[in-house]
Length: 199
Image (cartoon, rainbow, N blue to C red; front, side):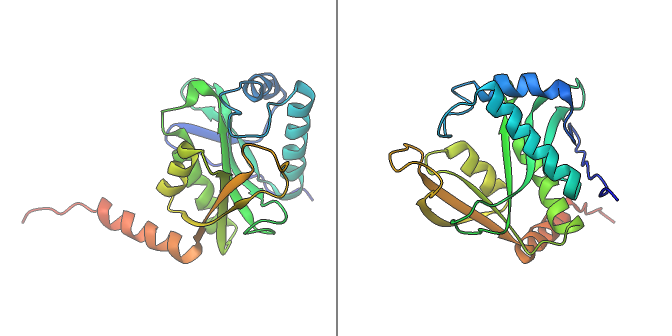
């Protein structure tokens, strides 16, 4: 029996399973040197399609993963945000990471943070995970800022064993948030959202 599909929505975004129409704009994204600045190299069309194939394979097994990200108001595909296994040989190996990759046109709108919060809600609220990780190249200040806004804390800096020794992005940072930390942030947010009425 296939797993129940988990597809979160936020105020501005739809996080959904992938469809065939996503492959072309995703390949364009993965060939953009600015989008891929903190990755070892840009992707060919075949590599991009193979990446989507792997994502779809995880959806078929577990019902969630790296969701295709769509702007609700326009239906535009703008990249992905979601949950993915952590790579081997790094802090958090065997756990789950929250990650994102957005088209350049989607930068600066707060989409990564908005979708990242929804992904964490799935991780802790639906899946019952004890912790969630995130990683990026040490120089990637924009992604590190998103991690901090999501409540993750920097716990390690080390070379990524899966990258070539001479790769300019081999040095990576690793962030983490625990279930307890997430619950504390949620409680703080709920308190700040309360309105005090005058008698």
